[in-house]
Amino acid sequence: MYRDAQTDHGWEAPLAPGHQAPVRQPLLRRLLREPLTHFVAIGIGIFVISHVIEERQSRYNLTLTNADVLRIANSYAQQYGAQATPEQMRTMIDNAVREEIYLREGLALGLDRNDEIVRRRIAQKFDFLQQDQAAPREPSEAQLRGWYGSHRDRFAAPAKVSFEQRYFAPDQRGDAAARALATAALAHPETAPGDTFPGPPRIVSLARDDVDRVFGGTGFAANVFAAPTDRWTGPFRSGFGWHLVRVTEHSAAHPRSFDEARADVRSDWIEADRKARNDQAWQQLRARYTVTVPQVR
Image (cartoon, rainbow, N blue to C red; front, side, top):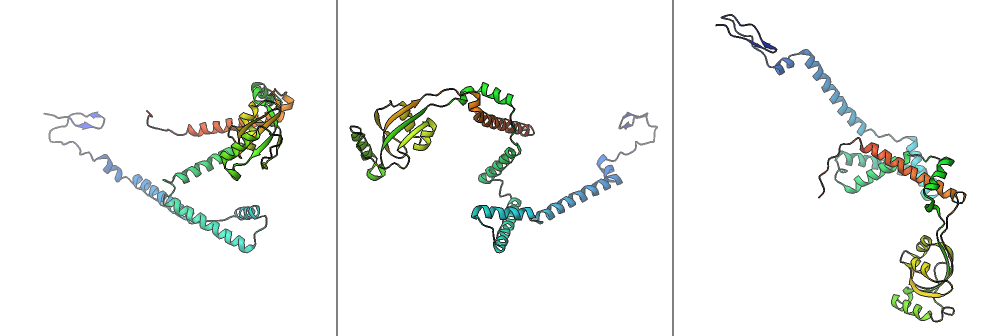
């Protein structure tokens, strides 16, 4: 009887009696005997060794350029208002070299991997670098007018207030005593001596945000803006102490024309454009990554 011999591509013709099918060597063994395989393996080995040597050499090569030295000198001059002496420059250069070597050794040990502060600082520095790359663009007249028309309320003149005050300091007598003294003085505020306020005794035409900034965000501004005109009221608590207040003028908020608000419109447009371009850069960077996160329940 004849039997069939199987090949890589199917079935060959039946073998004659007394003939055996050729022995097939495993594919891996055949590849290992190929000269081309040896050549490729040697090439890969040389590449890996060269890469390791190059990385090692670059890690242990440290070059400070003239620009680096100038940066160190300028930093010293800005901080101390004078030029560094040659001896001071040598010390600062040695410190810069020490810092760079310590940094490289620390990174080689992976000290940055599990340090939240280091990770955050690197991320912040990259964020600042990305923002610095987006140079501000100058808007056209049409863009400015369009921005003004779309955000008209943003450029309205805010409500403002003018007032005079009597101040009672808690650090001299305690908070409760200062409040009690201010309350008693409300009966005769014109002659109440009070204490010397560290700021101006009379406030002229300040917006609410400005009052908060001067007196502290403790609700003082809200009380002043709600107070009637030409009548002493209080006492109101500020970041400094207790005050009696007499509002001399209330100025209501009102819209400004484009020409009046031009400078603010331009600044607002440039800032919005910067944020939009930074967000676009972030979206492009984010698109490079495949991110997998667990579902938050």
